[in-house]
Length: 262
Image 1 (cartoon, rainbow, N blue to C red):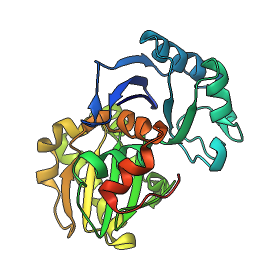
Image 2: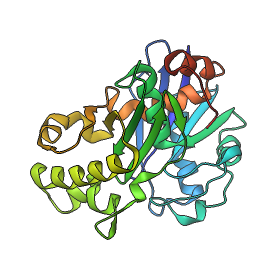
Image 3: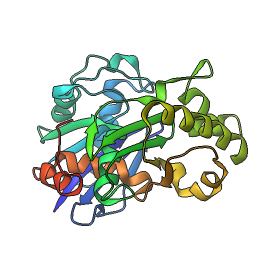
């Protein structure tokens, strides 16, 4: 079974058909740069280009880097244009895609659901925290497999600053930090999140998960197990497709025991 997934990030909009039996992209993903400013119309144009690249004509799942309320309305937009706030993203994307069935969910929630079904969180109970490091820091919190949606823990205050302004991958790149320097910041962030939520497992995702061996061994003083995401930067695409699938509830229930709408 294949469903299309699109992952909207602060730097790129990427998508591909997803094989839900394997939990991976069925074709090489296609990516366009996220426009700046990332207004609703400019992002819509990017999504249309990604979906159109494959000539897709079925259901589409789309992630968004912010809080997505019931019905697909955007509540926060930290790393895209603030004009998104209050927009019904599901209706907007459906219209731009010619009426295709569309679902929209938080980007980190999508990545987390995919990792819980197919990746590092599979068959894990207790409290699992998925954190995605990229332009910002996304979070997905699971307790005994049940998603607590829209946590957005990258916006926690850390040392007088928003955490993602101190420890995101973008900050590392912008300031040309060494892995050691950046790992210390990530360590402080993980310790803070651990103090608040006491997770049994941290799953570290985003594009930087491909280089987990360069920084995860440097993190000390965190009690929870820390592992890299297995789906790496495709997790959001896969999770978006899962959400869009008519069989999505069954896919997630099989992995985590139950499924709550997000």
